[in-house]
Length: 225
Image (tube, rainbow, N blue to C red):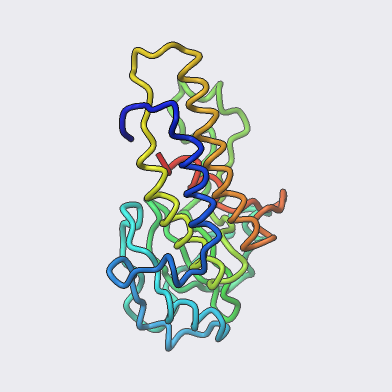
């Protein structure tokens, strides 16, 4: 982020509202789009295939590995506990959509749901001992929910991509700024991020479910600045 400007928030919010409300045709650029040609051979709903065919996925610094190159599903989810077993059935496989950061993302064969996969759950025991008292009960499941459909995943990815171009122009306070100024900056920044999170929930109503919150919420709030 750039140096802080206290008058920046109104235009930032206005710009975010504009891009988040635009049709995808106004957000997608050919130069930024990653096309997955193998989707033509995937067993997914036609609406999902059409979305990926038409728009592709945005190329993004967090998108650290390309999707699979073959036609057959390659991801095998770890149904480690009850939470994971609610999201995937025994024997289900996923098409590899690539990584967001270090976590692989996949599309469920025959359904089009998009899930985030880990090799195994992360618990408090996986943390350094000094941090464990602050994360009692931690359980990051091996399977987490992204979107109900691949089409919704594609739309959300592009809207976040567009929002990032605005968010990363926000000017930050000087390190020596008063605490009140730093707190105010943080509050206003996260209010802007909530605009993006609200779009996630608008695109996919299931993303707001308490029982299976979407990975998008954490991803956006932790990786947009």
